Image (cartoon, rainbow, N blue to C red; front, side, top):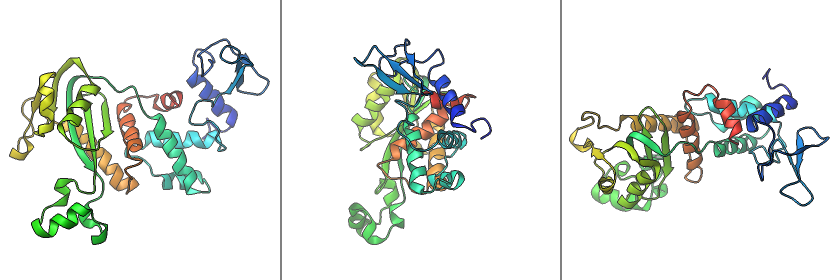
Amino acid sequence: MDRFSTEEACKTYLRDARWPEGVRCPRCKNDKVYTLKQPFRWQCQKCAKNGYRFSVTTGTIFENTKYPLRQWFQVAYLICQSKKGISALQIHRQIRSGDYRTAWFMCHRIRCAMQGGAFPLTGEIEADETYIGGKDRNRHWNKKSAQVRKTMPALHVDEEAFGYGKIGVIGAIARKGNVVARVIGTQDAPTLSRFVRNVVDGGKVSLVATDEHPGYKRIDRTLPHEAVNHSHGEYVRGNVHTNNIESFWSLLKRGVVGTFHNVSAEYLPLYLNEFSWRYNNRNNPDIFRDLLSSV
């Protein structure tokens, strides 16, 4: 708060983070721009007939905002430093944003900036799938999914085991490296194998470790693949295990349950952005600056 006590200090820091080698046009990347009389505004003559005017916030998540950059910086810092996330309601209380929806909007805009740069993954890779969401059995009967209402009375099945009412998520992690996580519609073989092939560098992968899910069998054709059989009590076989990706799932679910309490399917990709990006920058001392330079 002391460092960014004024809007000028915030804009100076944002300018230096975005353009460390000098101001460039956000459209055409031209470095020969003219400084205007208005502070932190420039004009590029190359990409527009009458000149293209832009400011330090043009093309960023801060563009057209009516909220002070001081508050934006505070929210970004809190999100970067919270291992299991921080809720919009807590942000609202801390920055005194007047309306909860303001804090909610700011948090989601910052999560939009938390993406990219994590793949292709190399070395020893672990891949796994999971479900995110509340347990269907805790809902009122008329709120349960149709599958559960139809199946449970007859078969007495555990709906959590079948993923009813939950959202499928898949992830891959390089040991001692980065993680990539995506929301998927179904956990069938084409979806699982396509995800793994898309996020790894096939020529630089020494192992892809998964569980016994049959959907991963297709990657045997192109990648070195080994699996552990959890249903038979096998969790580690030499260097074949999925402990790292399961630790990431644990971190994500503790954040969802303990911090956010409820995450909708519509916005789950943004929360995956946040947890993945923060995990991938866990050892980065300039995490705050890097976030602002990527907006």
